Length: 303
Image 1 (cartoon, rainbow, N blue to C red):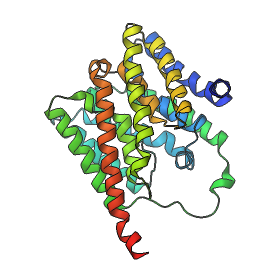
Image 2: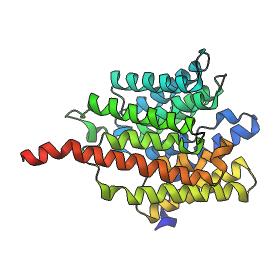
Image 3: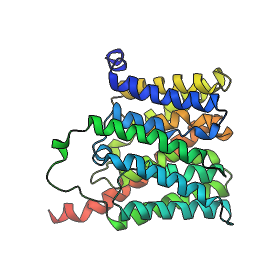
Image 4: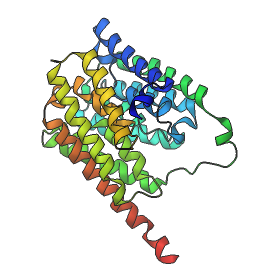
């Protein structure tokens, strides 16, 4: 079943796009080209189609692109790094709300250049190029009939404010504790989306947590096994991740972003990284499930 899936046209297309990004970073000697979430976006459009992602294909290009430019611009401000991250998070979430954007990976697109302290726009331009291709793939594979009629429910302001504060506090505490391995941008994208789900229960956590944690463990193992080879690590880690998603019957696009993170920052290539993935994913998902249970309690009683 897994082997049949790996032969699909959608997988080949998404895999090729990721490989092109990896090759581009090596050939051009520009590590800033690497944006782990490109792998997650490609899989979430071409392999595991996420309905609310492909509903508005233009958002797949404009949202992360603008976020990447905004994040890079923040580095020109005379502010402490944490203040830049907080400001970038607030600005991007605010814009997502104004333009009714449901695309969670917009957040890591803004945070990563700030976190890495990028002072050029290579990352932003690269993001624009690769997300444009993903947008075209979404238009090609999108069935307009599925989205005709009716309106999509948008997230509540209260929920958005609360999860933004939670993510901001999590990042602040991680930086204050010098625990960079607890800052996992792809996971933040996942949490932002599940926090707004109408139903997110405790039993929805284990498989997601398992897939992401094993992905973190294996991605670091492959990183050390291949001695930091960008192309080799990326190719193998993406392949391992898609196999994990199929074995656990849990398609999680952001897992592909997690699989490429060891290529970006030294702290994400240590054995502390999978611990960070487990703690961050588990902790924030438990908060999300607890909040959703509390939020839905009045309606259950009223029924």
